[in-house]
Length: 454
Ligand code: HEM
Image (cartoon, rainbow, N blue to C red; front, side):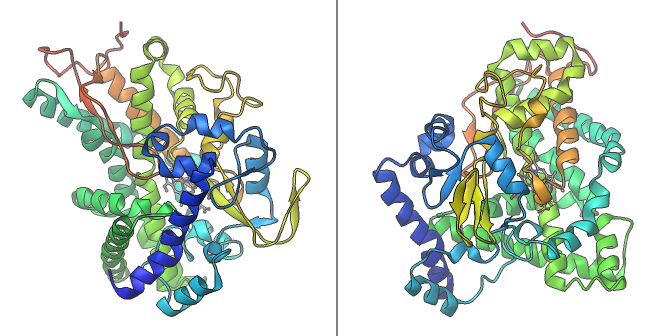
């Protein structure tokens, strides 16, 4: 890390780590979750400790809400916007000065302007309009069959891998991570042959959503973002010279032609966000879904008996173990939330994963129930103008991936403890050893069979 990087880290993540430690020592449930590896692995009990305070509890470094109605109201309110450059709010003057001296971060991050996630209208409207057509429910429905083909090809490879090792494979490495990156690469016209490299950059960059990173993680984020950015910069240049029939070529063309005035940085930020969000989240939906189903054989049996339940099951996975755990907003003006004043500039943290277990919305909220009638009322894709652009795609991929997997390998079972990803906001597994078939059996179960697990 350069001196500037170190100053930037110390004034942001470093300062935040210190503040969180102080709050954790005084028993703050949010700060405890952020620091304690065991609680990070299972934060849900601590979220319940925050539920007694309304509309906000005191969080590690901002007010925080775990309530479904409060989260939804803030996310839909025009009185709140993205954090933008406001992540320096509340810093002592000396740290703000240090940041000014260090200058802006050299890379384009997913939660820094001009990323769509980090800007308010009118910029947000402009960026989102350019890409939204490719992600409508109708456009996504046309990708379903191809996604099923990709799933079947990966499952063939999985069976071959398993045959070499007594039916054992790593489900995340060999399936859950590969399916989404293949689909989004094909959509965007990015070479599928480079998917392992993209996954490595994506994994390196994904902690950039978290607050309070240590120096090593911060350095690795910056390195991965810089490498990904440099690859994309070159790729967009190639498309400008020689456009193809893909979303990024359209984006390059529109940005040039219709006077919308996208700068190269805006173009890069949009392309990189859509690409990264396209695979860094859905991998967790598939992994978290497999883990839930391993733990609930009765639910697995229901799905085997009635495959029409798979769509609802995916929403139930998104609800019970949300791949994006939280987000935040900044008040654009003095306002009130459920009668409580919030001052202009103040940050509020919204725990989507806890809102999804709000007992006022979901009966027996801690239970995983694939027949839950209102599972789709979750806020795992957020709400308001930043509602996930890829929600229809993620739902379709999750459904296709999980159904194809459990139908192909009806005896699929864990073969050792899974390992969680180090990221906190993005929640999922880095590795999940599984056995495709009972020990000693051939791992090439016939496709299309719908057996019922014992
Ligand atoms: C299970 C998978 C996914 C989950 C849980 C998820 C979750 C989210 C959430 C919570 C947000 C909003 C954050 C906020 O309000 O601050 C978001 C935004 C976004 N997501 Fe997803 N996402 C998923 C998959 C995808 C996919 C497959 C794409 C592919 C294009 C995608 C692209 C985006 C983009 C571009 C935004 C920014 C939208 C905006 O700011 O207007 N996501 N996602």
